[in-house]
Amino acid sequence: MKGRILTTGGAGYIGSHTTVELLKAGHSVVILDNFENSDRDRVARIPLIAGTADVRLVEGDVRDAQLMADVLKRHKIDAVIHFAGKKAVAESVANPLLYYHDNITGAVSVLSAMREVGCKNLIFSSSATVYGDTEMLPTRETAATSVSSPYGRTKLMIEEIIDDTAASLATFRAISLRYFNPVGAHASGFIGECPRGVPNNLFPYIAQAAAGIRDYVQIHGSDYETSDGTGSRDYIHVVDLARGHVAAVEHLLSSSADYAPHRKVNLGTGQGHTVLQVLHAFSKACGFQIPYQIGPRRLGDVPASLADPSLSLALFGWKPELDLEEMCRDHWNFQKRERDKSNIGMRIPPVTHKATSDHTDPHRAHQLTSGSRNVLN
Image: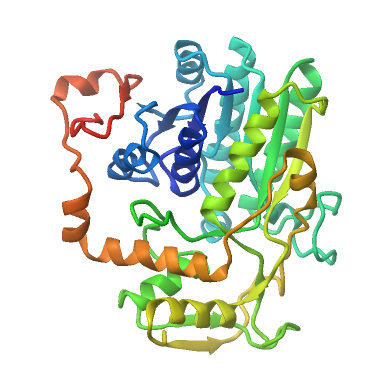
C-alpha cells in the first residue's frame, strides 16, 4: 500500500535520505522541519535525486501541537516518521534540560496530534544508545536497556511514552527503529551529513580531515579488547537505513497479521569495524593516507557495539546491502562536492527566497519541483 507520509525533521541527514527512498518507492511525502540543524538548499535536491516532485515542505516546529494536527489533517497523512530532535551526546550532557524539553516535548506533540486526528501509524527514530554498555554482542532487542547520557535517556523515555500511548489506543501501531551508526551519503553526492561545528561522529570527522578542514583524526584509545585495540562499531550506510524506514512504514500500512502495538527493531549490519579499519578504508577511498593521532580513551565510550539485525529481516524483509567500501566512497564523494561549492552550484538549481509576504504564514506548505527555483519560504 502506498501512503501519504509525514517526515518530521525530514530535511536532516537521515530524514532527507529516507524522504528520497519513500518517493522512489511511490509514496507521497510531506516534510516538516524548522531548519535548526538542517539546510533548505538540500531539500531542493530531493526531487532531483528521487525523480519525482510528489513532496511538500512545511516550515515549522514539531513542538507546535496545533501545527502538527493541522498538517496531519490537511494532507491526510497515513503515517508519521518522527526524526525531529536534538542528537549530540556531549551537548546533552552539558545541557540536559534542553534535551528533555525539546525531544520529549516534540514527541508528545506528535503523539497528541496523531491521537487528535486519528492517524494510527508511527515510525520513531530511536537509537542503539538505549542499550548502553551491553555485554550482549551482537545485541538483540531483548537486551536490557541502560543509558549513559541525557540524549540516550530521551530516546528510551520516548519509547516508553509510545508504549503507554499504544496501550491506550486500540488501533495505534508503532515501530521504534534503533539505529546503530549511520554513515555515508547518497551516491549522487547531492545530500549527506554536514555537521555544524566539531563533528560528534567518526565518519564526518575523518571526511573533514581528508578535506583539509581538520589537521588529523584524533583516535580515542588503543587498548580496547578488539582486533587492533581501537573501538569497534556497527556502521550502516544511510541509504540502507533509509530503506529500512520504507520497509517498516510499508509493514505498518500493510494488511500484515502482525498487530503488535509497538515494536522495537534494530537497524544495523551485524558486522563491526574498528576505528583504524574505517580510517584505512576511507584513506583508500580518497586515494591518500589520512593523518591521525592516538590518545587516551574518552569518558563514556564503549569498547564495541554490534547489532543483531535478524528481527528486521523476519518482520519486514529488510537487510543491509552496502558495505564499508561503499560507505567510505559515498561519504567522501559528498564531502568533495561540499568542498567544491562552485561545482555544486553548476549541478544543483539554486534556492532563492520568495517575497517577504510568504513568510507571514509559517504553516504554509510548498510543492517542491525539480524545475522550480522558488521552492522554499
